[in-house]
Length: 264
Length: 204
Image 1 (cartoon, rainbow over the protein chains, first blue to last red):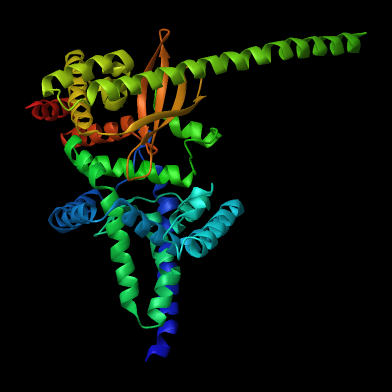
Image 2 (image 1 turned 45 degrees about the vertical axis):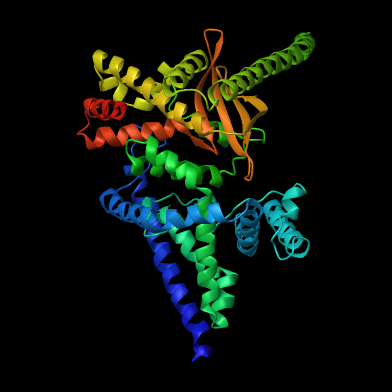
C-alpha cells in the first residue's frame, strides 16, 4: 500500500511536531529560571544521570565500531575524495538550509544558500565540488534548531541522543522537524527506496566523524570529565552558530556579549 | 546671547572631537597592530621551537612552559577555570591548584605540538573588545583539510600583552576547562580537594 504512506507520514509528523512544541513550551517557560546563575555559560542538564548513561553507551559504540571505521576511511581515501563526499552531503542539505534561512528571516543567507545549491549542482557536478565556496559564497549550516532559537526558544535542557550524540531539547526537536522535511528522505520514502535515505545517513555520519578523529582523541585525553567537556563544547558551538558568529566579521554586540562572560 | 554661546560651545566641542577622533582611532589601530604582531610572533616561535620531532619530552615541556609563562596570564586563566570555586578554596588549595593547572597545560600542549607537522599559522585581524581585551583572529592552515579558526583573547596586563583565552572554532578553551573542573568538583561533593586529587593523578 505505497499510496497510503504519504498520508500516514503526514499525520505522524504533525502529531510528533505538536508533541515537540508542547515540550518546548513547557521547557522554555518552566525551566529557564532554574538555570544556574552562578556560573555564566553553564549548561542546564537536569537529566544528567540519564544523559551520562547514553553518553557512555555512545562512547563504547564509538570506540568499538564508529571510530575504527572512521580511521580506516581516513587512511584509505585520499583528501580530495573525502572533500568530494563532504561537498556532496552538504549540497543535499541545501534545500533545508534555504528553508531555515527563510524561516529565520535571513533572506541574504537564503540567497547565498540558493546560489550555492545552483552553482554546486550545475558547475560542481551534482555537488561534488564546492564551486560556490571557491567564489566567495561560503557554506553556512542552518537547521531548525537554530531557527527555533531565532524565534526565541531557549535550549530547554541538554540531551544526549543515542548514537547521534550531544543535543538539547530544542535541537532535538529541530532535528526531528528537519528529518521530516528533508527532501532526500521524502524522495526515498515516496519512491519506496529507503536504502537511499539510510545510506545517506550512514555516509553523512561517517564523514562527520572522520573529520573529528583528532579532536575527539584530544578531548578524551585531556579532559578530566569527558562528558562535561563535550557538553560545554557542544553548547558553545551551538550558541555560536545561533548567533552566526563569524570570527572574521566585525564584532556585533551579541558577539561581544558572547566573549565577555565571567571574566573578572 | 545664550543660544549663541551654546552654539559656539557645541561647535568648539565638535572641533575638539573632530581633532581627537582620528587620534583615538589611530591609537586603537596602533593597539590592535601591536596585539597582532604579538600573536603572530608567539605563533611563529611556537611552531619553530616546539614542533621539532627530535626534541625529547622533557625538553619540549621545558620550552612549552617558557613560552606559556611569557605569553599567557596563567594565573588569570587558572582562576577563571576554577569559577566560583576559587572563592571557597583555601590559600593552600589555590596555590597547589595553580601549580597543577600549569603543569596540566604544559603536558597537554607539549603533546599537541609533538604531533604537529606542516601547519602554517596566519593572523588575520584584531578587534578591541573592551578597554582591556582584544580579540585576535587567526587560522591554522593544514594540508588536506579546511583551515582551523583560532581566536586569541589578549589582555593588556601591566603594559604586557598576555593571552587569557583561546577559541578553537568558536569554542573557548577556558570555558570548556571550567565546565570540566566544575563537574569534577560537583561530583566530589563540592570540594576543591577532589579536583586536586584528579589533577595530581594526571601527573603520573
